[in-house]
Amino acid sequence: MQSLSDDERKLVLGEVLADELRVTREYVKDIPAIKHRLTNVETDVHELKSDMKVVKVAISDLGRQLHQVDRRVARLEATA
Image (cartoon, rainbow, N blue to C red; front, side):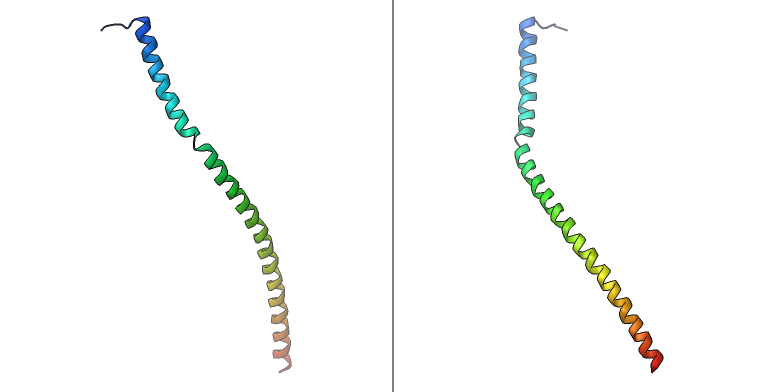
């Protein structure tokens, strides 16, 4: 096996590092777009949380109304 000279080793190492840098740049260039999408997702999640609070209150209120209707129906049936 032939060994490489110092200059050849440096050249090979430089090529390897350049390839790794190219790959790293490919991933890094997508970060702003990902960050923007993540911000949109965070906004959507915040809105969904608020909406879910409203839905929970509405369901609780409907449950109370249904219970009152059940009591009224029971009283009407008892008097009929």
